[in-house]
Image: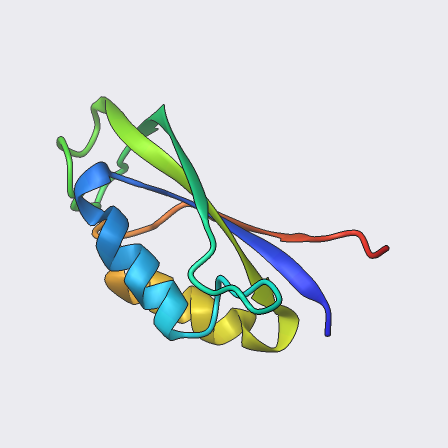
Length: 105
């Protein structure tokens, strides 16, 4: 089973909702441990274009938002379901996330 790393960026108030969603979809399992994740604070920036409806700020103006970078692992066969759960739970129209392949032993 190939493991991947899922990383996403989220405002602090949505941390628990997004973690719950990805864990319920099967992410965060390492051996006999579950709900494994790591997160740290940072600053995200964006400017919404025409037709956007940002959760923070307004279209056409650059925003700086205090966000958390959250990391967890997910098995490759579960990644589509986990990403769908993340998107459904995330407050942003276009959540930023990355999926990385992890090197084997």
